[in-house]
Amino acid sequence: MRKPLIAGNWKMNLNHLEAIALVQKLAFALNDKDFDKVEVAVLPPYTDLRSVQTLVDGDKLRIVYGAQDLSQHDAGAYTAEISGAMLAKLGCTYAVIGHSERRQYHREDDDLVNAKVLAAYRHSITPILCVGEGLEVRQAGGHVAHTVGQLENALRKIPAEQAQSIVVAYEPVWAIGTGEVATPEDAQEVCAALRERLAELYDTELAAKVRILYGGSVKSGNIAGIMAQPDVDGALVGGASIDAGEYVKICRFSD
Ligand code: PEP
Image (cartoon, rainbow, N blue to C red; front, side):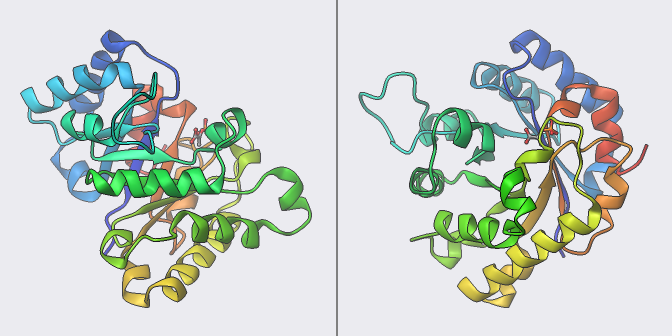
């Protein structure tokens, strides 16, 4: 049985004081019943992580957290990079890897994404691996092949013991931050294909364990339809995750 995961990608928003305020609001609004039903994660900027860690540990909150990226290197002369070891020390459960904004604005390719997945596992950080097609690929009907190809490349040299814990986020690029959400059927089609490929790469048992999220303009008004799909195990939420009231509703799969 896969526990659903709602993960909030704050992107480059909220300083450490605002981060504390938002996590406090979430912790106040969500209760044990919610946390029994769904895993709730926040993915703040690096500069907020220490504050979030202090709050979560101090108040024994059931919210988990992670980073929006990590370096493929473990230490050394890599100015401005943040290693998996550093994130692990900050208590991060997750790191987003291969977000389309990293692929697009920082030219991250599948090889680098694969190196970052390997780096995350070296430090016991669970990757939230983002895959998804752009508009042109979708219009040409190549979305499944493109997305499954990204998954395959990201998992090179990753043994089953590690791959079984990965979180995959299907994020069609044309739906990110655009207000244009994929239909639940679109999300299901690709998430099912990703699971099928996991079964081929590893086995059906592993594929049945892996959580596959949908991301792209998720809001309280569309989350229920997305969560009703059999191969969708949660959501990676961008814009709507920095609004406490809206994010709480999304975590409850309802408006
Ligand atoms: C994201 O950044 O991963 C995302 C899905 O953004 P948004 O929800 O704003 O489309």
